Length: 268
Image 1 (cartoon, one colour):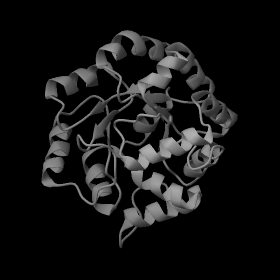
Image 2: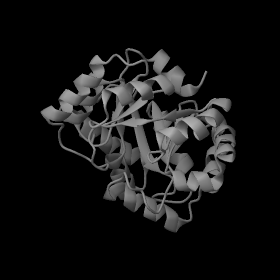
Image 3: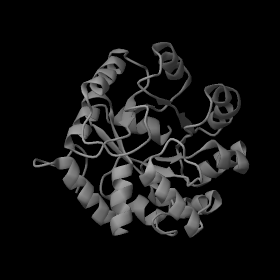
């Protein structure tokens, strides 16, 4: 069974926490350490960003991390090599998140082959048109047992959401707003209503909520309305400041816990 599917099937009553970081930032050789540290600390799933020169769905924090990674010399081939070196140690799902251009340059089939060889379970490609996904990417990904995770936003129609749900597997990435990535202090009533509306649709796939989660309020709101939360910009910022995954995670957990207990999860 694909690790993504196993994670959700085995944790129906556990609110999941997934973290994103950009490969090659803040240091070129730090990818393996970040992955292994997050796994050791009980993070349920990891999104590893493929740095790209024009990350249009990302806010300034992740854009800056991508710029740093590219300047450090990170490439897709180098990333696969780093992940392959720790493949036998990684038990949790790894998802590559990147834009279509570098993946197409690498080649869809070679990309999927390298994902399998390096222990990657799936991919998120924000600018992949759904028609191209169905016709060109999904058949190849299915052949290699990989999951292609699609995104929905508050503007996505119910018809479109059900179509995505029918033709994907793994989970659906619920973007909290139509804006770019970036930490937010709270989710307003409009976003809360969006979360509740999708929850009532009783989709086949589990859902994870991302974009803007940075504190106790946003975390709890996401976890109440989905299988779990995805945090990117907040962790990327802390990792950039400390250049130490353990320290960055400590500070993140403090922010997520607020004045009370730590958030749900298998933390140390």
